[in-house]
Length: 247
Image (cartoon, rainbow, N blue to C red; front, side, top):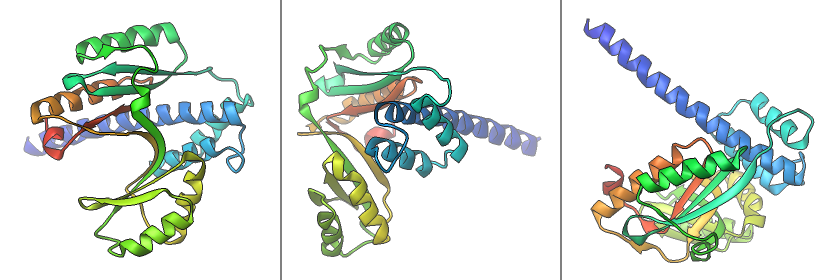
């Protein structure tokens, strides 16, 4: 009986993992479609598409899924048209929240995101009211234990066009302007430097410190938003710790 119960638990876990993977692939497909629609289907000429493809490959998204998404974006395959929307709000403790959404039905998504905001105690604000608190940057995270020579790493990053490299705990963080994201990525790859995170994202200009209980609420808020199929990314200016993530 114990073995059977264990198998059921494993099967349930696999189903949850598969569902999350399917949702992630769906979100990445939308990202690729939008990128190809706006800039064409050649990743060498379309930085945003190249970034989207790299992100999809990083999570082992099948090649055929990527190719279909590109063709849908360029119109070579019939598909749904997606719009990009940014929602802004003030979450627990007054933290700023930016929510990137891609949707094929604005009215439906508006209503659903409004409900998520209400449940997560997020006060919506006029678009543009909080975006100025963030900068859009290329961002790379690297395990400092694997690359102890900070000077050598900085030389690689800065030569490729990065703005800065700093150490945060056990991690090196590299930032750059979005147009040079691919150049920095290629330079790190050529130097055989593996990243734990590599993406273009919104970074807060100043982070907001919150207590543990507020931080746990912020984490739950992020999880609730990220669970929505149309939400691509959630950004906040809150400083979050591992203790808060264990909520």
